[in-house]
Image (cartoon, rainbow, N blue to C red; front, top):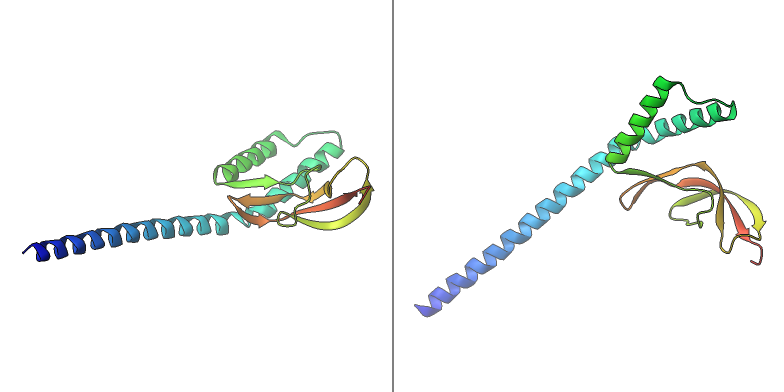
Length: 146
């Protein structure tokens, strides 16, 4: 009887462990599906954000700001995508990282930098969590002593 009870106890513990592992796998799969859906939904929005950035730059170059209505829509869209996890990256002065940046051109050397550095950002990059949606398109400079 003791052997049978021990066998049943072991079977129960094994089944409980299998069920716990199943639940973890299902939760992980659900999370992956949700992240993939958000990625697919927000990827096309990146081009819209680029268009908004170009409109802002154009308005600034003419010494004005965006129309209040358009500015409100642009700001709201930027807040919504940020809340969904889409984060912009790539600023002048960032160290060049080939996993995050696409170098469009090399502008020579700069005595003020110690590593290959982003000098100008043509198009900002976007990521969701650790996943790069689009690499930042940049112009880079090398350190003068390289």
